[in-house]
Amino acid sequence: MLWFILRRCGSAVIVLFLGSVLIFLGIRALPGDPAVVMAGQEASPAVVEAIRHEFGLDKPLPAQYVDYVTQTLSGNLGRSTQDQLPVIDIIAQRLPVTLELSALAMLIAIVIGVGAGIVAAVRRGRFADYVATGFGLAGLSVPHFWLGLLGILLFAVTWRILPASGYVPFTEDPGQNLQRMILPALVLGAGFAAILMRQTRSAMLGALSADYVRTARSKGLSEVKVVGAHALRNSLTTVITVLGLQLGALISGAVVTEQIFVIPGFGKLTVDAVLTRNYPVIQAVVLVTVVGYVLVNLLVDIAYALLNPRIRLSGARHD
Amino acid sequence: MSLLEISDLTVDFDTEDGLVQAVRDISLTLDEGEILALCGESGCGKSVTAMSVPRLLPPDTTRLSGSVKLDGRELTTLPESQMRQVRGKEVSVVFQEPMTSLNPSFTVGYQISEVLRRHEGLSRQAAGRRAVELLELVGIPAPQRRMKEYPHQLSGGMRQRVMIAIAVACSPRVLIADEPTTALDVTIQAGVLDVFRDLRDRLGTAIILITHDLGVVADIADRAVVMYAGRAVEQAPVTELFANPRHPYTLGLMNALPSAAVNGRLAEIPGMVPSPLSDPDECAFQARCPRAQADCRLSRPSLERHAPEHLAACFHPGGKS
Image (cartoon, rainbow over all chains, first blue to last red; front, side, top):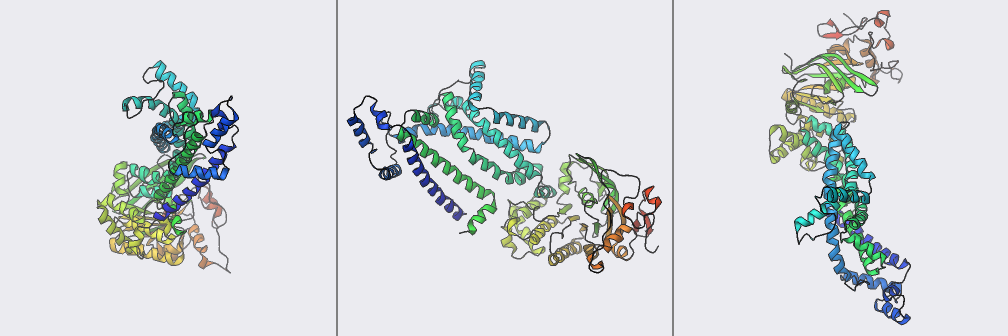
């Protein structure tokens, strides 16, 4: 198991290296000159040149990359070209907001999605199954922005039970924070829940008709144990795969959701940075996203191995 | 009174094609320490008959009538919660497919211990110790190590032995073994059959052995019921059955054994099994039967006693009477 984790960590490092190269090159392939943007249209070429020099933009690309990596590793992600604030501080301020939103959305999605999927599979072809599959289809088909607007209209305008938008840090007022986060999290989690529901349902249907489930029944085990331990354990691999794959969708969903609910998170930061060609911020945003993605995939792989002994052992055998 | 009494058992399945008549009016008994073989070709209803005892047929689509009594207690109407006390404890099953019948996500030790903890109320440690003994009993070498392994690390024969260890863990009164040796090669087959014999001798376990292999029947069973198209067509002690088969279908099965092959060619029974969707009032075997006459198409022969313990359902039975 330790070997398996080390191997996975090794490949994660390689992916991160390749990712950093791509980010670095990609950002420089964008049209537009950040020095010009910073200096303004009217600035003299000398000023533009000075800015270029200050930010190291006049060096050859490999040298810029080495600078970039050493700086990044020492925790220095540069300064925002907009307001000269250290990028690391901006990220540290915005990231927790999005992490909270995503974590809440994921929690909601897992509870609703996996729960409904199990119920739908166990009650296949009955009322509960139709309700769950119906909501699943709706959850998949409805886009975030529409669901968000509908949510604001219903909960904030018509029923007046939740605030329409805004953000209060959790550390300031946990109650207010949750009150403002619950609707965005529901909106963000809805599509995710629908996907999880469908995947869980079909995985559970497969597992429930498996021979080993019949064996579990023949042992005289309770239905809770048969479904909750024997069938679910074998369905969880599917669920975790979907969880890992959907993380990207969750991030892009967060961008839209944060815009609608005016939440000062990572998604909003991304959009603003792209619109102002804020290179250091864009670079950092993408890097953090890549690191997040790689970390989640690492966790998914490890969770896989914990759940499915065949993966763990086939990993060990090659070492 | 017999340990297990099945009377007039009829099982239908609701399918998209209509009602499939899997088992028709089966009656049989099983005594303590007896090994009863249920034989016949695929789809003849032998597995369905046996699985009706622990009620392991899909509840949504199964329609069952008749009676199944264990020690005089009716099982068909027993509440599900009480039925769970019977399954794995009084009636247990060894399934046909050793490759898929064990849960791939749990260790062998866990899967054996589970049934002991459920029915015998053993602690995790005590159940683990007992599980090691059971693995030894079914002839698995290095049982301590195997306990921590997963099914995919074991061969088919080993998995089948683990299944048997699970099934016999709580010393059941009735053990149902559904084609327990079909997926195994011959040397391992013999070992598995020895485990069954040993179990019967030491614990008095009654065994229902489902098989299409008459070799296995001759080897281990005391009595055999031959089934065809959902009905019992012949029933007799094994020595009597082999010495004096009455029903032409039984005879056909015997002639189809590799040892009975003439010039290296296996004998076969011509024709096809009738559709389980219809049940005309005639002998189900008449279309394939070498002895069929006009009366076979007019009504269905019932199971008649031809010798003290020998029953057959045929208007024109063979053998000495």
